[in-house]
Image (cartoon, rainbow, N blue to C red; front, side, top):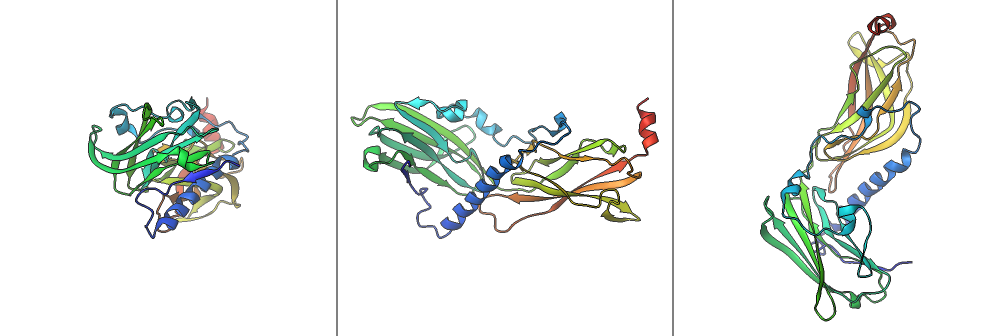
Length: 313
């Protein structure tokens, strides 16, 4: 078992909300981690390009114009690369909705006996330092038999850009390398919607629906959905599809669409008329005060079978 030394995020040690903060972040991590495992069963009908992930709002675009930093290898290339016998990675999401943490993760097989200096700064849109927020100095030789250290800083919910830097020196003070990362903190917003690949469907065709999330929150959707029909101005269960339909769970990041669709084959005996797909979604972010589970709807029309046949000729 690898021994880990975790340093509390600077600024969080004496906060009474610390247990709540990290419990919520841990819950979000569980939800995020649960999504891939629940999607093992692929739908029988191949999904069109409409169901692939698309970017609606790139919240990280402002970071592209900032002065370049030497990012840890994993964040830059997606691969872990050894640095003087150790692996260095960034910790905390680059996009922090309502706040989070920022820092580094360093692990080794043999203690490198380094002198580490970590700094956090709030920067402007040109990358200039507006305020130094914190500094930490660590001797890895003081960590005993630890094989991993994860020092980090607390990012509060105030919208801003932040920069972390890590300077690594040998025991004799010789600089071995520098690494850095940018982070953006934004306020959460809810703008999720359910979108269909078409407004009209013929009996026997297949409906594809995706979640679009231009807002700054995380959305978990799936588990089940319903098909309802409009009858005399009132929505109710569609006679051709009266049951609740199970499906996998999927996760949608801020500013993107879902990477999978809700799939519903229109029954051949479906009568012409107005229908809608109804599906519950969970909107979440760290430090969320209460759970938000709205039901999203997307309306569509089922056309007569002969009309679809005529349109295809």
